[in-house]
Length: 467
Image 1 (spheres, rainbow, N blue to C red):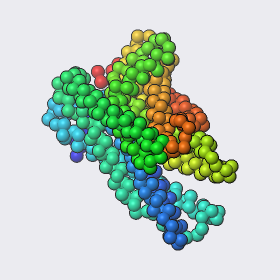
Image 2 (image 1 turned 30 degrees about the vertical axis):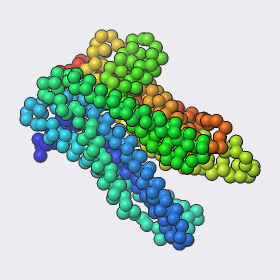
Image 3 (image 1 turned 90 degrees about the vertical axis):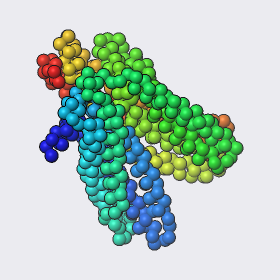
Image 4 (image 1 turned 180 degrees about the horizontal axis):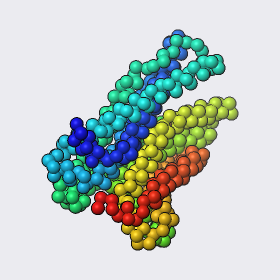
């Protein structure tokens, strides 16, 4: 048993390095419990009048829980891959002692599954208690009628199983490539260049195969919307799914180049130059650090942009003032509710970004020690880490905003294109401004604690790490 625990520690690192999995699972569990308890309350309220609102909300809750788990899987996969990529020597030691990749991958899956179980269980308990307290308070205020509400929803157990399965599967996917490295390659820290190029060609092929039909379907959806066809929105959804999947698969070709462009805006001082190099030196590492945040921002922006495009479209319809006010109120309320529901996915992505930045700084302690020994001041080291976080975070947010506005506006056009005078871009200024402000706060949270942690280590101590 002690040997097995030692293996897990060598492969997955310390508890700090694994804490992201637990936190992400906890957020997913909390989110699932809160939505399910909300659906349970509405089912109780609608049971007396025969309404099916609660049933519809249960379906909607399942969809949004699935979205949150999807983002959580991306974050956990990136976290696991980042941790393992920084522990090649420890993995090599285990391989030389007789452990094979299958055994190590089982250890990773088990470790991720346990972290998912602990985090998911805590999140579900906290989410259920929070929903119960909110319900009791609303009943006490008279906002909700006194009914025989359920204190616990047994469906949360299925959500817990889904969270654990998501964490274990993400751990398996995240460990796939690095744990296939043979001991000699791992000891040198150099991967098979031929295998990497071959994988890149396969990734590029899948990107093109998904992107071309995805863009074609989006164009078809707008055409159908302009003709008044009800199939337009379904086609837009399918096109967005294909195009979005293409962007995820091909992110390692797109994101590092965008990061390089943003990095050139940070100046040419030594700290900026090193930050730019760190941000783009490993395309896969850059992609893992940003792709979750790209997805989170895209989801929020898509809903906000789509609803804003619909609101702008309604303003041009031939409606009476009363009908227009009612339509605008319904759309505004729907937009607020949808954004509040989906924002948890962005929070999960933000947690992943902060964690990845911390892991990258921890894994580069030797490099930071060398820079300190060569004359970098503590201020320059802190500036370097901050500018790297700015380059990565700004790229992810801007890319996500671009994708979200595009998908949201196309979706709105597929619904009401027949009554629009041309294409309507949905640009929700308050939401976009809020995203930018949150991005600034996120960069500070992601950069400052790792920088302070790095500065606490003297150059001699840092250079001794893994020496």
